[in-house]
Amino acid sequence: MKADVQTTVTVPVPAPHHGNETYRALVWRRLKRSWTGMIGLIFVCLLMIMTIFAEFFSPVDPKLTGVGFAPPQTISITDQEGNLVWPRTYQVGEGTELDPITFQPIVGPDYTNPKDLGFFVKGFSYRLLGLIPTDRHFFGAVDGTPVNFLGTDKFGRDVLSRIFYGSRVSLMIALTVVFIVTVVGTTIGMVSGYFGGRFDNWMQRFVELVLAFPQLPLYLALTSLIPVTAPTNVFLAFVIVVMSALGWAQMSREVRGKTLALARIDYVRAAMAIGATDRRIIFQHIFPNVMSHVIVSVTLAIPSVVLLESFLGFLGFAVKPPLISWGLMLQDTSTYSVIGSYPWILSPVAFVLVTVFAFNALGDGLRDAVDPY
Image 1: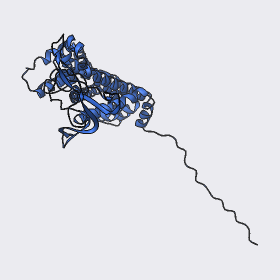
Image 2: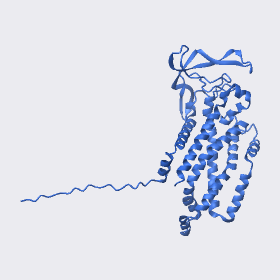
Image 3: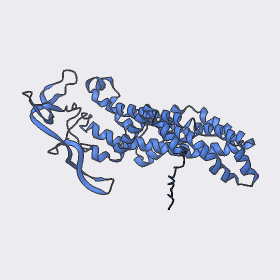
Image 4: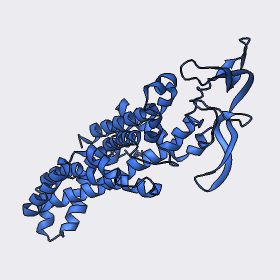
């Protein structure tokens, strides 16, 4: 008689997940909890896309002239009888009557000549990313005629297209200045805090001397040294150098403070004991630990440079034509009569405010995200 054989099936139990996460994953998970930080990140991404593909988003050639100080062309979804139609706009033209204050022809919409709007329409030719020739634009008139969604300036150039093109120069100046300030300030701060002693004392006296300069008068004095006939690239490079030379000191002071604390930590002392070089200790042991503070400082420094460039451009000390920047566009708002009669000239201010808010919100979110770690 055979005995029954019982077989036991062993089900493998998965190993418990300990939830190990990298530093980036921890920061990203905490950043996602900050709704202001995420809004700032979204706006920053949109600004970068707008800057890179400025030609694609510009409905009109920014150098094309037309009716000066033409009001914005509104988008309508109804015709003159009130019937629903495809989104359209009406061409702005000069009338026969004169403005009693400015004595210029009164401009207004021509309701007899509607222009249908659409996406991915044809317009002026350009090279996408400087390589691909095309004439497609994100939004505009179907028949390819110019549409001024934010009106025109005193020379009849489209304000919205010039804002898109101006974002390249304004953000390029801000990113270049912040990059130079970050590299120079971080390096000097780490070296000064790590070595200490007499070198640190002399370096901090030099930093204090740079911080003691009144920046605005110095900006105006230095930029006025460049002759008006100088090439635009030379003037732009000089402005970047001046901003960078006066901005690295604050970053250096902040990084030095963190380096003084990190230089006394056990793993740094252990690296010194086994004979690691100073360069290896600074850039492989101290630098990764100050990187979180540097990233937050960068996001908070970019809006400051954007505001400074806009202010200097408004005073005429930033970029020169034919370059376009937000500060240069604000020169048209130098008189109250222009602002009162043509308020759409202030449109670049809205983009400056959005840029400042986006980077500040992202910086605040990053600061809260990296603090616990």
